[in-house]
Length: 572
Image (cartoon, rainbow, N blue to C red; front, side, top):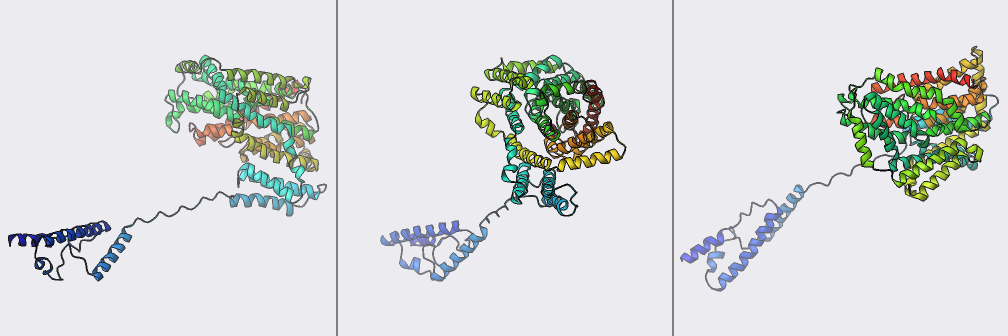
């Protein structure tokens, strides 16, 4: 009896059936019930329990080992299903795909400019319908380059496609500029700059100047400025010089001096070096024809508008730029030191850092020696190419072949230089359109009209020279690229200068030099300006303030001292 009572108590102890809170408990209860059936069967088999002790408890109190009634099992299963569904974590909503298409408002603005020119403004006498329609497409394209409904290359391609679809230009006319040798010279200039950065030669030259001139903050600024002027003719990209060579060096020097970006300590050293290097990049680029891509483009477009060929263009360029550009390079670091003074005046650690850096670089590598040899030969041919009958673009092609054959650059390096291919695409579009406008007489007509207006205002050739160059300079506040302004405005302004009585060669060179002087007006004025601003050492108000001060200072220097020099050499 004791055994039977104990067995009865064991059998009737069970998991409460109303505590089902999850599918895990249900599975555990079901498993427990199955084990119980096996135990009961075994016990009954050896006669330890009476049937009454188990079954006689009645239907109202089922044991843990007894199966549930069919209806209750169904109800419980349904309850568990509902609860499991309620506890399930909902799947995250799919994020909407980002819109990467055209920006509607800028696109409508650019298109409306073209439509107004084409259908609202009366077509002047002397302009053909084809020329007027091409002018409207050209202005819509230029407006889009400024407003930015699409990336520059994409919008330019759309503009050229529209010109072909409307039969304003034939396919051959639209893409004839891809055969322009100056465009390919500009593209190869990007590859040369990549060679300087990849081999570390540009870094080595700049570090050498820091080692010997960098014991004071002012000396450090002069060392960086003069080193850029030294490598500029062989590294024809201001953006590559800024981002690939000078920005890392300046950031390292500033950090060592405790001058941090986006911090009040930026004024210790970093802000001064950044502003000085930016404002000196203009005169450095203006000093040599091959120091910037926009120089070669201006020369090409100017000669087409003027209908002349400039002999020995590299030497002629240097002859006209040497006095005002060299003066600007000597004065700008000192004036910036007074106007935007650094808190740290002495940098005794800079030469030591430079010396350590040179030790890390080690002796000249094979690739650096190749770059020095190739670029030295290229400079000689650029200076005296006319005597050998070798065009500047051909010289650049030969130099690139030497880089590729010696392994200084690999073809994948060239393919990875996306800025070069992007420039090729939209430069060709602008040059093709502006060249066609010149052929159709549109540029000449507007140049003559503006010149006549200035003459009616009793302005002589010299006054027109100053007014037109000033307007060209100030208009850069509307452009985010020096080369974009050249493609859009240079032919027209050169034509207006010539029509007002200025020597054609002087008209070309004045616009060419001028284009380099506004690269530091704002944080968006040029590629190098955007790179320097992005580092965070100079606040936006200071960027505009000192950009305007030193931009107009360099402009005034070129068009005062420069004018005196140009008169002395017979250009004016």
